[in-house]
Length: 231
Image 1 (tube, one colour):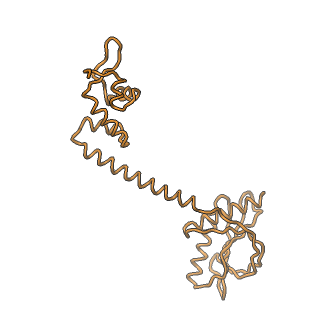
Image 2 (cartoon, one colour):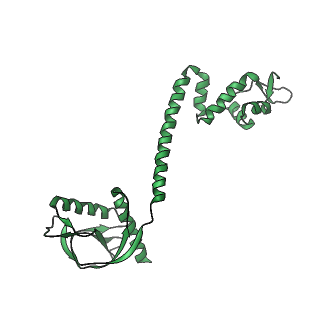
């Protein structure tokens, strides 16, 4: 075999494309042994093949060029450098797996089902709130407050909670009433009032999922109800 290899020959032996070899030369990672005076072509030594193959393998592992340079310059730190990279890859894998799990869950979730239904006259605990889209978080927050009061007083819930949106406020601001149907003798407390809901048509979204996503479900129902009301 010739003492020196042209860049094309060196590329075939190492699996590194000529473009990559030129880049590595420019940044000082893997420089040719010399240059042919007649042609100006880069010339590599056969002894450089092993290092070039190592560089290719390190890059395939995702090791940054800066750390490969450290490996070459301080081979006594090889174990520490590769150990740090291993830990970094493990963290990335865990993050990717978590993202993949969330994606699988999202793909399995069914689209919210909507329907119209006639609600009966019933006794309710109610909180009245100002609503300014897209800040629908006041709805689940009010429901949480109602549920906490219900639990503290040991009241019995007679039907699922619901809310009524009253349009016609100034600008984009309007009013929403959040209701929790209850039975028996109940008392008001602070902004929590007791009323008799007279019944009427309701736009209902059916949500099946973990409790921590209930708040988001209320926001989705509110957005869809407002969209349909304005169309």
